[in-house]
Length: 240
Ligand SMILES: [Zn+2]
Ligand SMILES: [Zn+2]
Image 1 (tube, rainbow, N blue to C red):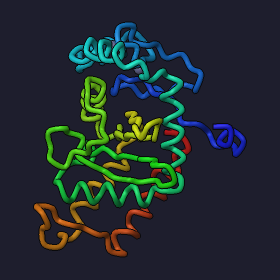
Image 2 (cartoon, rainbow, N blue to C red):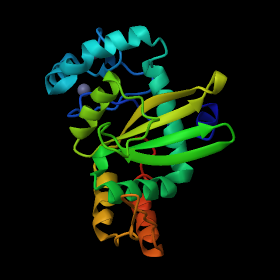
Image 3 (tube, protein in one colour):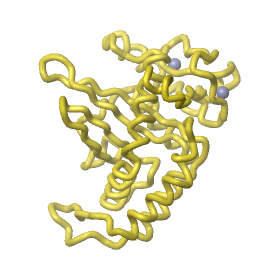
C-alpha cells in the first residue's frame, strides 16, 4: 500500500454494491453499510433498496449468521486493501491471468462472468488458476470459499453486465491452513470480458480430450491479441 502511494499509483476505489450504480467513491469515501449483514456497501438508500430487490434479500440473513460464526470476515477497508493487491498483480501478470481465464472458458464452455480467478500465495510461490464460479460444476476449485457471501457476490457478478470479475485471493496462515477471501473487481465497462469472450470464439479446439477435458494452450496469434486487449483496457484504467 505504502509502495503504491509512493509510486504515485492511484488506488482502486470502492464501488457501490448496487450493480446498476456507476458510482466509485474515494478510498475514505462515504459508502454506507448494510446494517444487517455488515458486508455490502451502498452510496445511497436508493441503491440499497434496488440491490435488495435484485437479490441481496435472499442472502443477507445467511451472511449475517455466517459472519457471526466466522469472525475474520472483511471490513470495507480490508476489501479495499485486497482490491489493491489484485490491482497490483494485474499490473505484472495480466497476460498470464487472461490466458488462464481463456483456457477455462474454452475448456468448460462458460461465459466470462461465470469464471472466477484464484490468486494463491503458497509461501514462496504464486499460483494463478481459474475455474467456473458455479459450485455445482465439476471443475469447481476447492479453494473457493462457497457460502452465503459467495452466492451473494456471484449473483451480483452475473447481474453486472460483464463488469464484475470475481477473484479469490488465498494466503497461507498458521498450521498449514489457508485463508481464502473473495475479491469482486468492478471494471468501468464490459470491454475486458467482452474482448475475452470474442477471443474464445476464435480459439482453435484443443488437443484430444484428456480425462473429459480438452487441454488447451495459446498460440502466438492469441497471445498477441490478448496483449492488444490489455493495452486497450486495463493498461489504461489506473483505477478499477
Ligand atoms: Zn445485508
Ligand atoms: Zn450506488
